Length: 401
Image 1 (cartoon, one colour):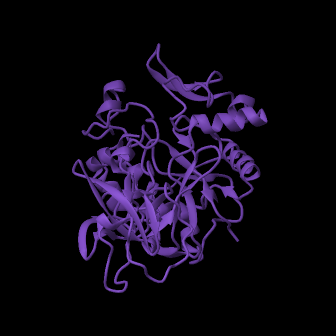
Image 2 (cartoon, helix red, strand yellow; image 1 turned 90 degrees about the vertical axis):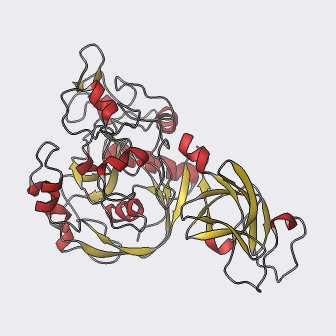
Image 3 (cartoon, rainbow, N blue to C red; image 1 turned 180 degrees about the vertical axis):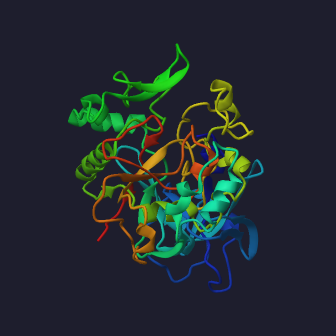
């Protein structure tokens, strides 16, 4: 993937102040003998930094490394890992501490999952609903009532770490499930309504048809594109199949886990900041590319991300947890029932949504969305059998009590 390929680093983990000395980058094969710490890392392992750290040689800092940086282990010499960092077109060899990184997980069907640490954050919007409506008044004139369910902003603790998919589930990954189980989605069965939604290239219009499903949306969908036109029920069925296949619990994220992972330590509208135009670097949203295709849309940003429809996963910059496309591309189903006033009664620790309801939550915005809908705090919902060309899924690996 373009962004990923340019940002993936071959790295060495460093630990602050350990015996007062560091192996030099040129000493990778004969680092000084210290009391050895056990290590489960192996050369070639994919890892991700979970905190700000540095690439070092001896006592010299060669480069600062941000949280969420994807790395590959070159050599294991506890308490260090050796790597080569590609910086400004040059290879820089050094060391980083094992304590600064966590292993990535890649399962048998190629899903990469990043470690998400336990922590706490403020969930919901820090802006009044009226202020949000005013700030985005040029985008279809949103009403303040559209954003009242983002309040009150409240503190949430995620008490257990988990792993989350680095990317949205792709067409290729969903096809493995459908072919192995002969699964028919709600769109294919005609649950609640016939078919799903897609793009008619002859008329140039988006709409519903019995011809549309995850297999056919009317625009390009390679195996690397996010699967869409899957309902919440379909998404859960995929997770159940994956759990049986892998012998581990795969599931949809709770709404709280999703927002915590999306924010990745930020408190701004988006994980890159507050400016909607800046989304073009981190997200596939309605933009000049979409405006060229759909001239009557009045909500696209002026910037151009190069995609009028969904993009293959991982084409934009990740957040600090190493997650791609948390804003835009396609919405992602969450496990929770939707509760308009749930935030006023949400528990502080590991909220899992109302006990019952009519609609399920989905988050994140899409390639067709206005930027107000792509904010970290924005909530959307649909019935469990609902499906659309803008809704897909992302999975979590880990237990929920």
